[in-house]
Amino acid sequence: MTWAAAWVHNDAVTTVGIPFDAVDFYAELALNNNRGWWAANAERYRTSVKAPLTRLLDDLAPRFGDAHLFRPHRDVRFSADKRPYKSEQGGLCLAAPGMGHYLRINADGLSVGGGYYPSGRDQLARQRAAIDSAGSGTELAQIVQALTADGFEVGGDQVATRPRGVPADHPRLDLMRRQSLVVLKNVGEPTWLPTADVVERVAEQWARITPLVEWLVTNVGPSLEPRR
Image (cartoon, rainbow, N blue to C red; front, side, top):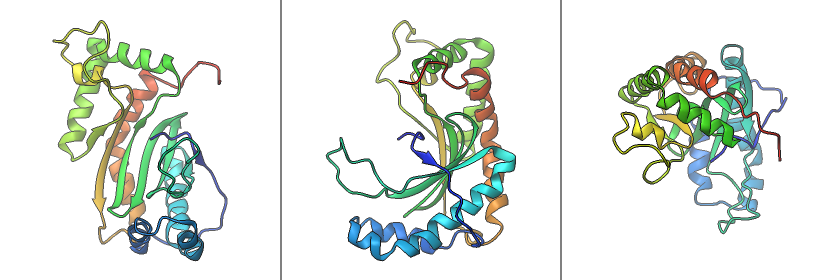
């Protein structure tokens, strides 16, 4: 998974909250992932998924950064899986290029999270150097520990054992193995989902992730490598 395929749109949005039909939409899509079903439900996607998430992200953007909504289509050019549509609708607010607060809606309901996926090798080098450092590394470990205690799961790509040169008894070996760093919590289908309260509820969850995002912005930052 990456965040590089995000896009911004300017559709007029009037929906308040995220309707439960957004969850139903993805439950049904799982059984009908084809262009015919999508065409028949295109207006439903716009009103139950795209428009509500656009408004939510736009409402959160002043506090959390530029809003982006991911494309609903999968890139199947080099994939054996030819299903044309993603099984979820994701979006995020960027604190820095490739780093920020994330949310998604799918058949399991609403999930909130944040972190980053590196776009250049220089980011991974800075990430590991900061984790290796006693000060910044201990700070990150404490941030991650607090998030996991709050119900967030730590994810992202990681090496199978440990990076070259990292000792087996490194005090933050689990973090040193990470090649990207994200956290995610599923909140399901709470009663506030289809109401205006969704803005502040998501903001509350995102505020808990902000220390992680700020750590990444400060210690890793965007890639400085030229685009290929």
